[in-house]
Length: 84
Image (tube, rainbow, N blue to C red; front, side):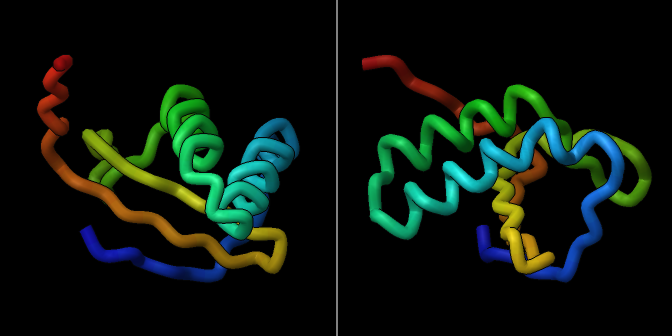
């Protein structure tokens, strides 16, 4: 899953999620992967990434930065989760 990057524009409704993306960025910068993963889980639980045809992406990671850029990775099939 390579990262894709782009410039993005914050639209109405984004302000609700801005603190979560900032927290995620701080966690990644601090290499606090547990906290970064928790943020990712919250983001994926609250938002949907869609393909250009409007269909939902099964799995994704999304980072939106204060500088107007974003990075995301995605997979079109759900990951199999095995509880051990």
